Length: 113
Image (tube, rainbow, N blue to C red; front, side):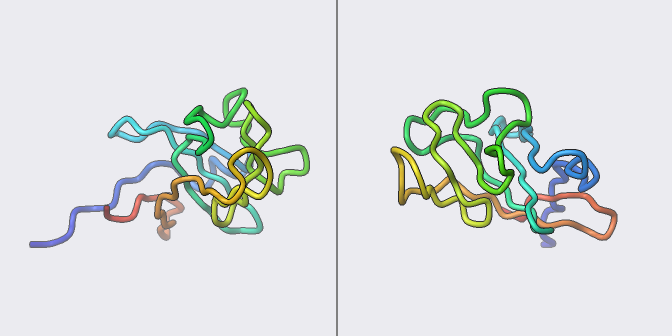
C-alpha cells in the first residue's frame, strides 16, 4: 500500500509578500506558516497559555522586528524555528508544531501524519 499523497496547504509565493500566513486545514485546524531566514515553519494557531489564536489581525503573527511570533492577547513571544515561548506567561512551553515541506513547484505540504 503506497503512502497517501501529501496535502498541499499553501504556495511558497504566498509567503513572499508577508513572513507569516494563517490558514485553515481541511480537518478544521487553524495553523500559521512563518518564514524566517529562508526556513518555513508551521504551528497550530493556538497559544499554549490560554488556547487563544495568536493574531490580532489576519496574517499578523510577528512582533515589530519580524523575528519572533507574538501572541496578540498577552504579548508572549515564540521562536519561529521551534515554537518555544521565550517571553510571557507561557515561557518554556511550545506552540504545537506541524511538519511541512516544500516541493519543487513551491507547494507547501503537510508531512504525512
